[in-house]
Length: 173
Image 1 (cartoon, rainbow, N blue to C red):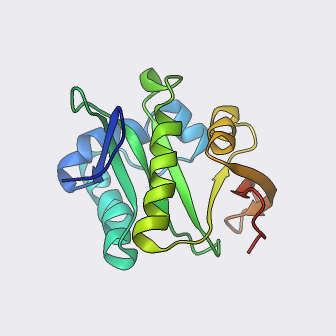
Image 2 (tube, rainbow, N blue to C red):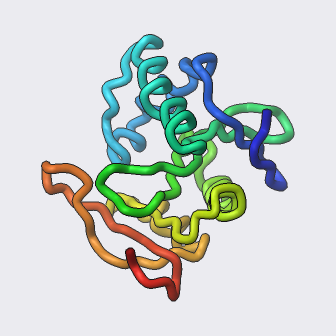
């Protein structure tokens, strides 16, 4: 069942039946470089990732990452959704596309729809975005959906920092 529909995309909850797509997406070199290596190397790993990640998030918060597919064909192209991280006070919008679908505005279209969905369905007042400082494509998407750079933050004890973007004109949390 689609939770979000845009002009060109459908977004729905991920399920274990999406494990093969998740295995492929999470092992794309750009995903590993800019988002991180999740250690997903098999269908079992992909199912574990789905259970502990998106599916667990649906249970805990009511939201999570969603499978993003083309409306016209139903072909999966990536993921986009809302993520609540222990290291951040605010919920953030996350997105990743298969490389062949980058550059067509799908990330912007899905992220904008997810922002609106989060505000409307969950009453989220402030949704942020985070990205690797070298991920210029994601920075452009965050800016296009109305978020502005606020500060660098470390999400893990390793100390590696990401850039945090928040709503323009809103006070940081």
